[in-house]
Image (cartoon, rainbow, N blue to C red; front, side, top):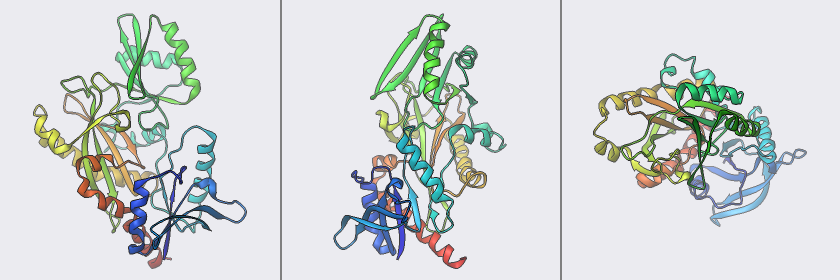
Length: 358
């Protein structure tokens, strides 16, 4: 049997995605394990984790060797636990006897610095700068009137801020617990003091705010979900439009955004040239995954967030190597089986390749 481990920082928390993969694993000749990188004993190199018992059809506690294939679904934050887990995963990735389904992507800044040099992808990237100082942020705000600050390692829209210049005031907006929170500063000195405190917490990036608001004033974007199939070929699993709150900032589903199938949105959004958009999106899908793998490391899946601006231009807002699957469950639930089976099929593919080329 092939051994495959799913890495997560919270293995004992219920996760229907992991459960559904595990239920199907035995029929693919795969034993499934679930554990945190922190559960590896550094002396014995054994794991204290969960193992899916296909006869009992449930997870059981067990000690076992590190599986030969690993599917990393950890989300790393700034706290010490995440940093320790990240260091262990980096060590695992360097081992020759272990194969990851996907090796992930670097932080948003390194990703931008690399992709902006690529002539095929540069036209789709919003101008991005590092928020190296409060003065740098305020200079960019003066240039664009409205800018976005986002964490270099951010996910789910956490700690994303809009800064807007209105007359002599500076308005700051962010989303907390699905609600828009805002404050105003009457001069640059007040804003500078606030920025100094913010920039000590983590590294931020600056981007001009692109106008992706619909007729109601709600921000929207396109989420694409791509995965490799059982032959190692990239496939589009689905696409959907995510729409945030009216006059809001985020389009993340975790922040309360609504989801509409791309086909349904296309029939409503008659002000866009959909033939042109389709060609642009298809071109991106053809080049982006393979370019990422050439520039960085092998990947298994991607979530790509694309802004469709009012002037018909499209922009890559974010690229995520550990995407969620909510756009499929909400717009095309009949496709879910293929998502549960995809990691197993790709694991089989990797195993057969290793067997053929030891």
